[in-house]
Length: 267
Image (tube, rainbow, N blue to C red; front, top):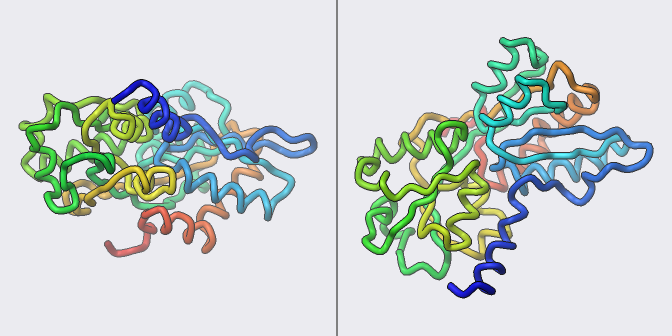
């Protein structure tokens, strides 16, 4: 791939990490809700925040996207966030147990899904071959999120083991710091194929750039995603109102459009 082409493709997904919607900048006279959000929520949460700001013009949402495990460690050490939206429910629960989060604010908001994703220019027929596409001899690097602190990475490893592929392909792993960086690796050409969140694969910025096969839900532990208002939040009211928006019918509609399953759906 030429350097200009690489840069162009890199720019498409660079916004996946540590960026918020245009409305997230501080505005005079408005209270800022500082959000630590799992990177699979990029795009979906931006839409939710835009809706929230229309309904609650006193507030602006300021999301930072990254790995849930890293956010947990930062919050546990006093990082000044108001709301934590994790890619699992374990980290929010642990914050409640450590009295770093408000117990009654703990909530489930979605169930995540995994896909095997390739760039549209790839010769690998991932839709037809499914998981077996990971065995293709042309593949040198497989991108997954770091399973040590990214729930989607842990789920990817579990799925590969269930599908009988882990030992065969683990030597080709390239680890993303979070699931958005994982998508960035494979979309940019730094990896040949990747296991990423369906919510990123279906986002407009990536949907036209690749093809995917969804990993069956029974191949990995259910990715229940939870959130919590933090005990040290400066904007507890705003964080609670945003929590209500996320779990509202409108919030659910946006999450479902990006491929998330709602917590009470039997899938």
